[in-house]
Length: 274
Image 1 (cartoon, rainbow, N blue to C red):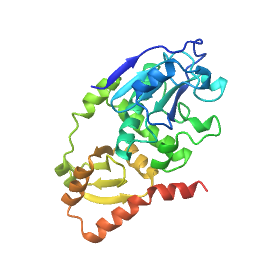
Image 2: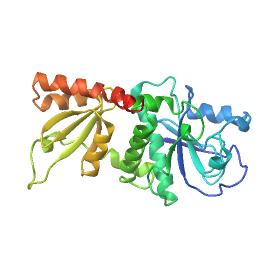
Image 3: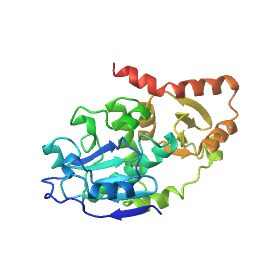
Image 4: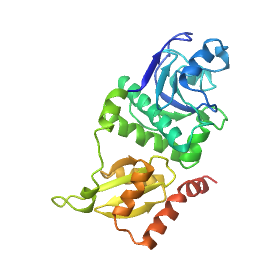
């Protein structure tokens, strides 16, 4: 069970409306516990979000109905809940993705609680409001464009929202979903079986499995398209990801192609933004 800290370090009044969530990267290496202690004695005018989150801890330091100082603009500070994905300068890719997922679970819980849709208007990035590289680590991992990162976040939040209405429910349901590899190798009653599989570290990119046939995915938009068509997303530890690929009896030429395509996903999406 993830550790939760709920405290109020600032109260400058209520949000005038709750329009959505803003995802940040902390550009630091601190844990949520350290941020709570540090922020307590810091000038809040220098910036403070509602949440500071890692895979192990969710610290809420401002109630979600109150104003935070996190977007760099007063109008958006009055309308959006802010989430800091912690340790963006120190965590490994695998740990950062886990920190990011926990953050997106909390965002999903809050969006559901306030009855908000999950779309590009409600899921925002810090640099949409001011000139900043934030969320820098998420940008590097998910295509390096505003569009690709937002779509990734939206897809993940929708996935987590499909598991439950609270972080605890999402974590419990996620732990009850083992991957049945054999099921991907056959059709049941004529139904097409599709999985979008990624490694926990994110280094291998996505691989699609459709009725036992594997192929590399070069664009995050392709993942979204398949999920809209009914595909399920599965995240595996790197070793299990590699064993899954090996179990598909893929010939060497196809395996090399999958690896090459997966490695290009970031550079190809970055090229689109030039």
